[in-house]
Amino acid sequence: MLLAHHQEHRGIMKFGFKIRTRGGMVVDNLLIPGRDQADAEKKLMQIYRYCEILEAKPVQQRMQEETMDVDGIISLISRQDREPR
Image (cartoon, rainbow, N blue to C red):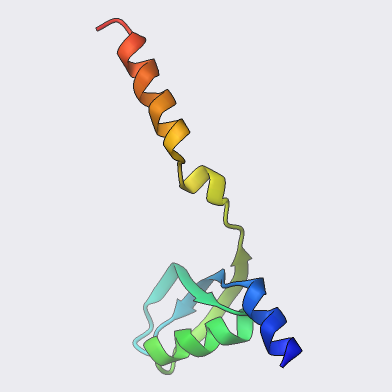
């Protein structure tokens, strides 16, 4: 029980994949979420059956760069208001 609780707090990571579909097409930069790489690969294989994984890597998430808080939005708006038009 303690182990399962600890894993829940680790959160979901994203993994980047480059695959070859069963039709031979190469698909790059597929982002699949998972608890770990094995979980992400399992999900990938459910979506792209019989694909060949050519490359797999964890993707770093920079939450602060991707999302902006209310203060950041207000700051951005106020800077735009001060710029000459």
